[in-house]
Length: 202
Image 1 (cartoon, rainbow, N blue to C red):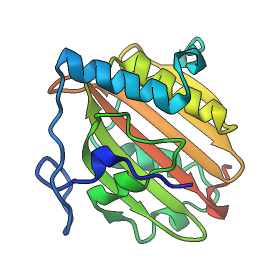
Image 2 (cartoon, rainbow, N blue to C red; image 1 turned 90 degrees about the vertical axis):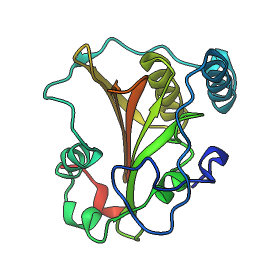
Image 3 (cartoon, rainbow, N blue to C red; image 1 turned 120 degrees about the horizontal axis):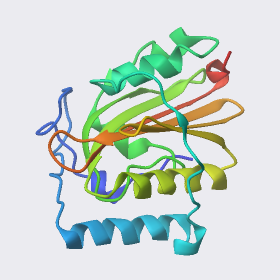
């Protein structure tokens, strides 16, 4: 199931590091206390209420350095697949991919998308999105961990004290969330979702 986030309805390349044609304006990051509370309230509503949010498990150790681009994380994820070329073939860059993320992996409310790429296909449907958010890292990660559990994914949580990563898997599908401090303000979040026959992991 794919979803469209109304926050993403007016995307353009104004703030994008990767450019593509026919996108509309990217929303600027708003980090006022009211904006943070509104984002948190909307995220709670998306999971069905505050009592539905799960606590994060104790983190396993995350090795390696954070990527300069979601393309780095994407390569790490796809390299573990049986047929990585099927997910990378025909990938296109466009902020519009952020508006068609699955319901289990949406952009956190009020997130500001900076990069996005993807492809559709019967062998592999792929989305890779980077956005920034003013909401604390742990709250964002609890949101995604809760959605992953609701959708029947088995999740692994890792952290190195600065960067945290949630990898969620079920048959024919993988989701990855990676969060690190943004160089500008708030958190920088990478989302990757891949689904289809080519997504089976080695």
